[in-house]
Length: 216
Image (spheres, rainbow, N blue to C red):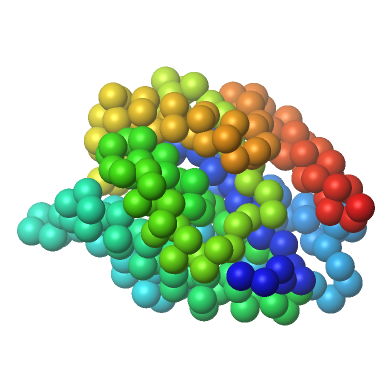
């Protein structure tokens, strides 16, 4: 896919790492940061569920009826369908307009959860990523690194979705997967077991540093 005018920024991490909160912090800070070109807009989105089709797929993936629980391969393909629609209808059009896109999850989550967590073929997942994204890669991915025990504690008594309910062993594999991916793919790793504003400032600093490299 040809290089677009906008930028794609992604936050990744296990459930309970603070992604939603930090997404809100970053979406408030970015438009006034001086990083975005004049006239560009910030599009905040998520996976799964960033489109109308994706919202239906999200419900099926995370809270399916008892008789519609997808198996591992079907789950992988549903995530790929969600991503293909997301790229086609939301992300790529925004980038072509010169807008910046901030996404809660992208391809890294599929590799961590379905590749490392489920144990599905990682080469197959990479091939599906390439098809669904048409080769689009984030300009910057931030991994919120948090101990698994703390993420479970933070989730507390809230109702788990289907993925969160898989158990500690599954989540340990996912957490290790994120750690491996952060190293292999050159993500920005931010220690997230700190006060909210400290984490937000660390993300901002990482983005400012990365943006300097973009301008060279």
